[in-house]
Length: 243
Image (cartoon, rainbow, N blue to C red; front, side, top):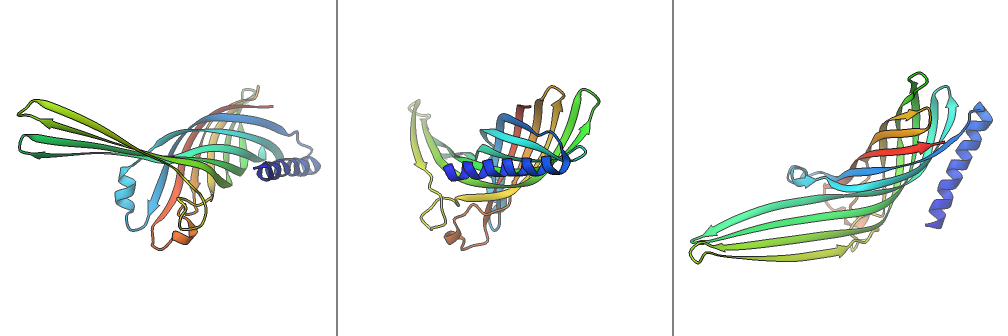
């Protein structure tokens, strides 16, 4: 963790030094935070069944970043970010045998915490003295640091003859492990591309949205025996401040 934070700091400082030595532009630093709507997308043999049932997992994001001018209204924006990702599944099945009806409701929620290092190119479109619209895009590399599967199954049995109802709930929680070996739950690294749209006021306040398109397979490397590929999809909304 210390090596990762140190590497991110070096990127920020090196990019700032390059920008200032070549353009003389003033550097800005900032922080932003908000909510994520995250899914894991499948491509392969079972993609239709998987993707039709996958739902958004609500999470959060926090990012520290720097803006370094390299041309008129054009910036390079490296940063370091804490991203809450994952996916959620929910389903209900019902069966009737004579007077007895059994309804089973199942849910599975996957939460993953990742540290990301994005490097975005940002183009400013000034709106007079009020501020500027910011359009951004660029790559990111992510490191999965913790995660958990939380599963719940609720079964309700109704006997219409006896006019009785019995409900039973079972929970199945599991901490996730990351790496490339077959005994791991997911890959420890992730990379992809970010696309963002934001508005920055002249006083420094920010509001924006970002879409993270995962490109690397989340399946552990040693377990990739079929054509199925699982990648992150994250829609984030943020507010922040830069100075």
